[in-house]
Image (cartoon, rainbow, N blue to C red; front, side, top):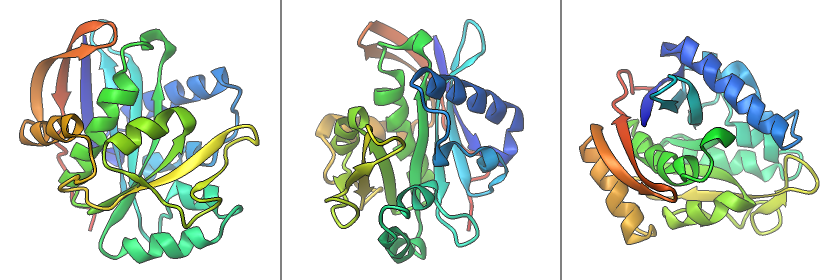
Length: 233
């Protein structure tokens, strides 16, 4: 039913445009019209990697996420988002940047496929498959309230040194965001065993087709997670 495809943003401009359109439509549905992380310049950024979900029947991109690798030339989206609240974010990212770090961002899911857990469960797992492939040892995530729990289940922990013990209002004053960090991308020591096992298995089988148990019953997913050009250094 679905195909997950991973790639470097600059290598697939047409798919990036589909991602941008789908993400914008979802944000509008929630009344969000201006978000720092939705700046579309990322499609020209050589430090951005993408995973898209394609509905096999239509070929449409129905879900997606991005991983931004931190660099001095291209600050992470969360740096611009958090800096007005806490400028300490620059020092924090700088501490991890030399060894390699990044941010999971822009995760969206079309309402047309809501209820399966495609984005929150399966797509978010693939981000850690990609992170290991591009060799970033640590990873950040700026979580909405509904994505915090599944993010922590994958081995992230709340970065309490930023904002109000890791939380602040973003992108609107009535929405709470939480900054989380994964300090060991390779081994995932804090992840739930089921999450870790799933991710480690996908790392061994970057291209495969599996029948996954979803909230709406079994669904066939083809994973194509091998990035042709993963070296960002």
